[in-house]
Image (tube, rainbow, N blue to C red; front, side, top):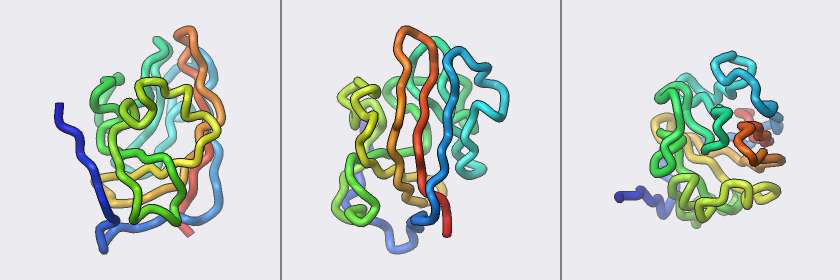
Length: 141
């Protein structure tokens, strides 16, 4: 398995440090409805299936894959002001394969294709195959 790691921010990268936006998908909500997807950019639309797996990028896939989901993203625990010192990997590796353990932790999400860095904090993660989750994330200024 190959993982991508970033040791520093590309000079052309953009940091979103605007207001925080809250997103949530309720347990068992229809993931195909736009209201249950977070369209961060044209390339990244985050949602989660009701079978209780990982979140995934609806703009690129129709379901989660533990080793790559969400496709087109990299994640690190830390804050946006530390971004040049953080190491990024897929969400499963970042969470130690326990995404619920990320609830309440400050994180940075890298949208690889767009080269955007976003502050993000999960505020809930449903278990028992319900598919619910919620987070707060930064927006552009």
